[in-house]
Image (cartoon, rainbow, N blue to C red; front, side, top):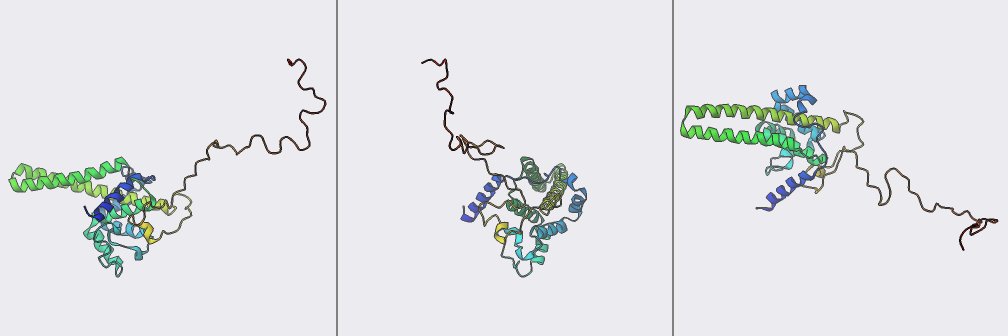
Length: 256
């Protein structure tokens, strides 16, 4: 295995340790923005173009083909004509364009993918593979029954693919709405530099747009209680004598 492939695997494993979550998961993304989900179904490449540009803070000088996650990234002349290269990417490599925008947001905001989302995405890929296998078997065997089954599986796989991609793009849009403060006060943040927007340039991405976690209290300090000394400062008072004058010590009745 080459060093580049091993680096890719290490970065994929690192994503499993991210601690933030998507604002909405794939199941609830349709309800989060139904109109945008419908737009993502019927105009999927256009939506992918707009989402990638928005993920780059509308600064196309940051654009790299497939967000730097593919072997072709940086080798397609993106710096000379980024808009044309992005159009080519979303139309010719639509699936990669959606996945790259997803990885870009995950690595920028330290977002993990839930097991439910992983199951949905995995089911989509498995269904596509099964449909492809049935098509090859039908072509080799020449059976009408297998051919009809392969066509049904292909239609089902295409339907699931289009639906899941639309939900993913809606999920990305809602997450950037959160980033831009459309759900409440916008957090104080700055546009990250280019190297912070790629998972290959940093071991742990920053948590931009998410409130920092408060540090744990010092050992021995209970939550919510001010620090106190024992005995309190200034005790006993200056000039005072102990025991007070006039008092008997030991007290009467104390056994001698």
